[in-house]
Length: 382
Image (tube, rainbow, N blue to C red; front, top):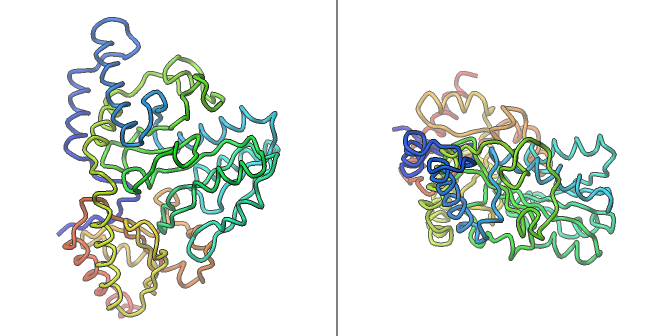
């Protein structure tokens, strides 16, 4: 039995998204900027997809800007905001466990002379609210914090960013990387959370790779938040992400969003799967659970006592797929677990198990059996 439990890295494409991509490739291949029928048909398809993505984000269609994925959405948000707001101040506040696309963009800003403050996290991978309030001042132009951590599942107090900004009278723009939260975390509404910019991605919700979106409060140049363009050359996506839109990928994104079950409706089931896995892990000697109890139930991070790479290889040979952390880190030690204060042996033996709404108890049983066997066999070889 093949057992795929690395849904934080990517998800298998759903039938609805695959069909939408294929149809667009074969039958609706016009350039959406063209003013004849074939182009207008493609434009209609693009706008229908935009509406579907917006509906699941509880925002207006004109507030959704399509990108090539979460990484580009994060870069546009971080660098574009800094460029637009640099006359108002130079402090940027992020958490110390952000995705590399936020962290690397922040490093670039540091090289340009911006003051970047990285907020610490506690043992549960959460930013202490007091640290956030201490970091934000009148010189702050951007605050960015992910909704759900991609390695351990900790849920951040995103709404506190707006409260901290208001408390200081700061002009700061609020950004949230919601790539791991979109479609999973109930109540993910940027307007209700006080968020100006929010990044999401299609391939985390059973859509195709190569497409994501950035929520821009109020829409670009429609009285909404100011974001400076980083690329140039066309009028597409309000000139903030110019270039001919990849209509097939966007159509797939829209179809995946439509097919996504309601996050609140399936949350209890996901909590049940989470508890089922933890119960199974408790019967295996030497397992440490690194994820917080109140984290997103789709993500469970553990340390097995066996080095991560040989354990992953052992499981992979049996058709069981998990990871040792963020797919973007490519095997490097987790900066998230390090920031949480985990000791070296726990860092070296960490595994991330991540669900989608398709995950079954049979898959979890398969993983638990493989994990227990792997601990015995790998230790025997050593």
